[in-house]
Structure formats: C-alpha cells, structure tokens
Image 1 (cartoon, rainbow, N blue to C red):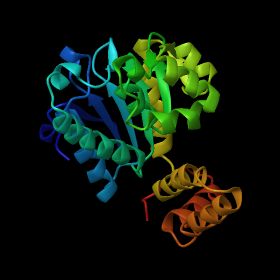
Image 2 (cartoon, rainbow, N blue to C red):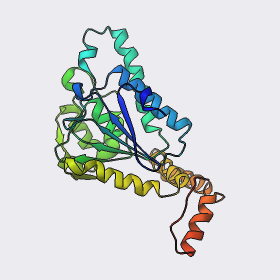
Image 3 (cartoon, one colour):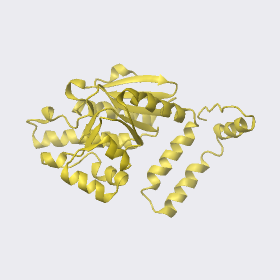
Image 4 (cartoon, helix red, strand yellow):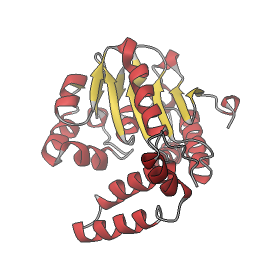
Length: 265
C-alpha cells in the first residue's frame, strides 16, 4: 500500500512487519471527516483482504494536542438529514473495518480522543496513552449518541455501569482514570509513547503471525459467545496452527536453543 493513496493518513514502517498509521489532519485536531472515514475503510479493508507481511499495526494521531477530536462538526454544519445519514454509513463501515482487522492493532493515544475519536481508540486491541491524553463520549451533549460503536465497545472494556456513567454524562476522563478502569493498558510521557508502542509492536511481530491472528480472533469473538461456544472456537483456531510450518519451527527453535524464524506459513 502506498501512503500517497491516503489524503488524511500518514503511513510509515518503523520496523520489519509493523505498519504505523497516523491520523493526519492536525489543523483540525485530526477530526474525523468523510475523507478520513473513507481512507480508514480503504486501508483496513485492504489489510483484511491481504495483510501481506504485516504482523502488527500502531494507530496514532499527528501532533501533541489530539489523537482524534471526534466528528468534524465544521464539515457537518448545514448537512441535510440525508447527507448526515450517508456520511454515517461511511463511519459505520470504518468501525467494522477497524474491529475486523485481522492484524493486531495497538492504539497510541497521543492527545484528546473525544466522540468518534474515543470510538476509534476503543476499536483497537489495546491502548497506550500519553499522560496528557483525555477521552470522552460526548455525543449526548450535542444532541446525538455514540454511533461508532461506543455503546458496545466501552461497556466491554469498562463494564456496564462505568460506561453508562461516561456515555450518559458526556464527561471527559483522563489517561490515568482510563488506565485505572482498564480502558488503557499503560500511560507514558508523550515523548515516550510511540517508542513504547513500537517496542510492543515489534515483540508481537516477532511471534508467529498465524498464531497471533488466530489468538486475537479467538479472544474477540469468544467474548461474544457462551463459555462453551468460546472454547469450541478456541479449539478450531488452535487446530489451524498444528499443520503450519511455524508450529514446527517454533518447537525446533526451542529445542535448538535459538530464536525462531517465523514465516507465516
């Protein structure tokens, strides 16, 4: 994939098998407009169709102020109801593309993640945040409600009661609160945030890619099932590893006391 294909995203390859995606509308605090929605749909649907050599993705925002300030209300000003609904279909598809990404996805939240920005963050497999980052599902203060997955992803991450409090009040919460509540895995100084995310991404990328993708799928879909059905899904996901070259290489490397050389086969 070519970074020139995306008007609102910057792409980089900080290390082997890792893609870094930066939301790049800093003049608008990386607010989510129609073009960014379409860019994210295209990028993540392309990854789902053909991950290539990708084994991990890091998603962040450009600048120090915002990860993503939410939907671009300047673009939305004056929209007819029909135009609003048509735009929202793009955002709905974007959310599905993010959630369905087969490759592990780390969010590096560098600043404000409000409204749709909080929902984009919540679509990631897990999050690191800068000390000054803030989050909010502020839609009810604007006469709407979360429509990018927030009513579903936040309760799964925070529990029903905490999620209801945050969604119904629209109150912002800090990176420290997000970490204490389990929404964020770790908080770092802004200067260290991307470096820490890259270290974790590189650790994931060293592992067998079929194994990490199947493990991600098993956790994500299993949580939406009964325990018994989740166990059955896990065994199906596990069975796919048995005939792979990577499984043979992992055991051989362990016995030969050397790092494994996984090829995704």
